[in-house]
Amino acid sequence: MNLQQLEYIQALDRYRHFGKAAEHCDVTQPTLSTMIQKLEEELGVKIFDRSHQPIIPTEVGRRILDQAAVILIQAEQVREIVREEKDALAGTITLGILPTIAPYLLPRVLPLLERELPNLRIMFVELKTSECLEALRLGTVQMAVIASEAKETYLVDHPLYYEEFMGYVPRDSELYAEEVIRSAEVGKYHLWLLDEGHCFRDQLVRFCHLRYDPTQRHNYSRGSLETFMHFVEGGNGVTFLPELAVEQLDDQHRSLVRPFALPRPTRGINLVTHHEYVRHALIEAVARVITASVPKRMLHLQPGQDLV
Image (tube, rainbow, N blue to C red):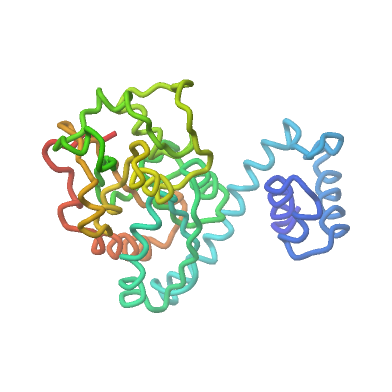
């Protein structure tokens, strides 16, 4: 058994296809297949059920894959210890970030990163919360910026800032005449919301006690906040924005923004890492740059804000 074989079974579990897994590992398909077969022969068990299409792990294979993820992360930490010793703030990392955070945070952060951490290369990848947590577990990302606390015991939260939810309303609606949005009344309007699985949507639905309304004539699958904003600007429905998105708006578009009545729903933004990730100086440096990029009022939970 060797680390290369563990990397191969992890890739096959990720892609559920021998050809795609081999391409990811930069080897031929026969090489990958042979190495995995040798590992199965050594262990005396089948890790994958090849009769199922796409292939899936066997019951014992799932346990082996979970342990392989731990081993590969620990092996990578040996390399990270060396990197930390040579140059704590250099190298390359991959950072997962939510699609409802990236468009509004990254334009503020990137200039500071280039100035404060010039020897660090960060590869950003947009992922939903569940995908960020899984990528951290597998070690495919080293850090993630998410809008909730990570419940898993193998992850560590590093609080960054707090961000309110804001309403975005049509100019010709009754909500435009109001100074605030009342959560109990949100459900009576046509709402443009992200797909299930986005924590931005899930947190709003819980806070406003929203239920699925089959009578709504228009729904939009895989929409973005920017698309929904255009709908609202055209006089169709209501949507919601994170606070940093409002910071980017001009006066004309900002006039369509309405805060919630007290208590105002607010999400906590955290930098999350695996508890075995050893580059602590780098974690602190990245967190410091992110917090320096947002308005100072957002660094603390304000009176009247309700953490969702």
